[in-house]
Length: 319
Image (cartoon, rainbow, N blue to C red; front, top):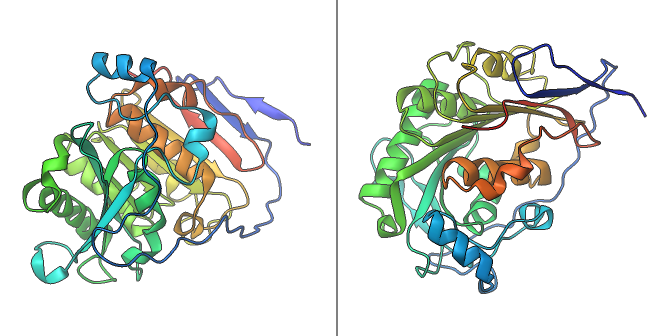
């Protein structure tokens, strides 16, 4: 096993990286998302009752949703909420290509934060469908979208993510379930570049998560939105040296930011169910969309390298 190094030469609280080595790419598929059909279809068992201490914590922070988190709960395929879905036709919307909304079925806990997710170049929303139930079952309204055309560039995808959020909060059938002040964006490849564009254009967003992002613009000094960037060590399409790493390094040090580089991963790893992407995306969204400090424990101190993680950087503690 190779030795690990803790680099404290940057102003960040921690940066863990393995020693440079020759990298052999092995595409590991953690599992394929199930095809989802129908409107208003329940996807999982009924929610578990929240423990008393979670109810008390929710009284202090009205945006906390669900029971106290554990390592098992953020790694689980499904969270505590039962989830339903509804399809949105491209003919009924403007500014993007329609999609699928996943949402907690229960209204007992009030409104939820929402996140719009864009696929990458030439891809459709089906490539991001696994995020739908996974994130919604943790207490979010999730909108996986199709873009106007599969060839749309990052700037256009950023605009479409914002149009999708506007539709969610203003016109969708689930708008009453959403807190319009707690919104986020995610995206893969050019969709990840679009998530950066959206964060730049709408600083009121609470979080942005670019996944193996691609963009010709390498500097994002304007972004104040908490941003979590996921790269892959074997990405030959949007290499971390040309995309994910300079994107992260250009973010202001005053911005809550994190960078995770997946080990033995490729550009397309975010397209299939992945535990590391899920657990840290859930934690990031909970921490910044819901202001739920119960999830700070999974982000700070900085996670160390492992069989799944080549490198993790970030600023801690978060403001």
